[in-house]
Length: 181
Figure: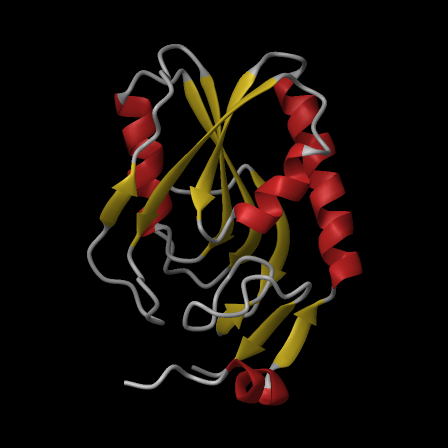
């Protein structure tokens, strides 16, 4: 099986959000998180691998004391459609009584985020706040799941760049692109 060509995808893709728009959205989210946390410490839990670029930038905009950990769970494994959830790495920090700031690149249907959020609550987190760089608003999101902090909306298309991949490529792109899947 050959890997799809990122250059070809970029040539036909539509740039949805440029780096300046992403930076502004991240700064805004950081300020909103500081206001909501009101100086109370939180656990900053990054969902790997997609949230890495967003989380790294977001963390530097938050002045509230944070403890860092990460989780790696996926339904995609390089595909464009999700399957069964695979836990690759569970968090190692204790959540008992803590506020968890769950950080991910995108809220699409939300199956993975719901499973991670529920895991945090099962482990004793007092509350879980969800911060996402992008959100697709399409009516297919898992019931009862919503992001507390949203950077930008993206169309109901296959999007990649700034953490989101095109067949495991392009996570390092400084903008977000959309293609017709």
